[in-house]
Structure formats: structure tokens, C-alpha cells
Length: 221
Image 1 (cartoon, helix red, strand yellow):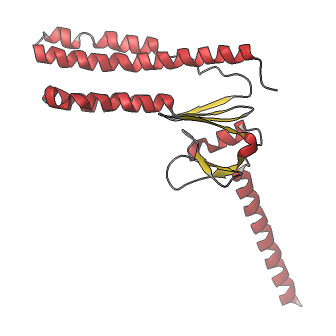
Image 2 (cartoon, helix red, strand yellow):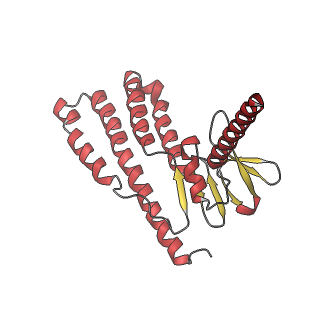
Image 3 (cartoon, helix red, strand yellow):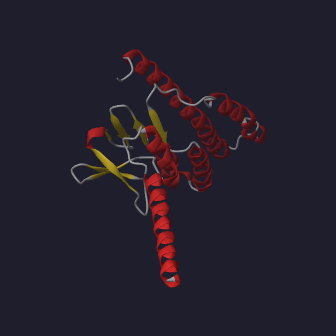
């Protein structure tokens, strides 16, 4: 039975609040870099350019959510790891130096960190009692459990879910390292490929030992 609607509403508010705090925490350093660009262009004093750094650090630390997203019972949200936000900051710093060199021609570089931040925030796979909620930057999709036949691990990219109609859908944010988490959250609805592989190895080992034992008995005879 799905949880009551009130539980879902509380969870959605908690998740939205944490997402806004993370966006704000990343936006503060980005705005500071824009401030530096203006300061260099207008030749503001050095103390004003660099003296704001402690304030930027404190604000970012205060804005960053301290607790994981609350989720309702039976629901698991698999997102892009939070280390990706550090990557956004590094990318912002890299494009900032290029921007300072030629602001009029390279202003569009500042849009790259924004696009990556949007990708990090939107990309997720939510496991619910009813099925899978898949969200990417420009689209979202729901897949009922009755349509899920298994999973497939491609050579590159996210894990794919095999459907009963022989088609496949990508599971955003679910890489090989998050596959065990997905299987556990599915409650047995997705076959445990790791357990199947271990069982196959055990059976092959048992068959090999049995074959060796039969060979030794034949030699003794």
C-alpha cells in the first residue's frame, strides 16, 4: 500500500528545500566570481576584491544542507553524487579566468557551469512502490514495475532497464556503482544480477570439482 498523501507532501517539501539550499550554496561562489570580474574591470581596491572571500565561504557552508533528503517509506531517490557540485565550482573557476581575459567575447562561458548545475540537479531515478520515476534535464518518465523485466549494464553510460516489450530505458544517475542500491530499493522487483553471477560461479566451481573427482575415480579403476 502506498503511504498516505500527507507523507508524500512532507517529503516533497523537504526535498525541495534541500535542493534550493544546495543551489544557493553553489550560486554564492558563482556570484562572487562575477563580482570579481566587475571589480577587475572597474579597478576596485584589492581589499574589496579579496576581502569578501571569508564571507563567501561562511555563506556557502551555512547554506549547504546538513542532513540527507528525507524520503517517505518505500521510496529511494538515486541522484548524481554531491561531489559533482565541487566539479561545478572547479568548472566555474576555469571559465572565469578565460572570461576575465575577454569579457565581451567569452561571456557565454559562464553559461557552462549553469548548464552542468542544472544537469546535476535534474538527473535522478526515484524508486517507489509503484515503479520508477526517471528524470533528466528536459524530460521525465514513469515506468510501472509490471513493465520492468530486468536491467542491462552498457559499456558506457547509465544502467538501462529492460521492459517487457523488449525496449529499454536509461536510468538517470544509476551507474554500476549504484546498481546494488537500486536492486535493494526495488524490494526484489529487479533481479539481483550480483547474486545470480555469484551463484553461477559457485555452480561452475562445483561442476568443475565434480568433473575432477570423476576423472580421478576413472584413473584409479
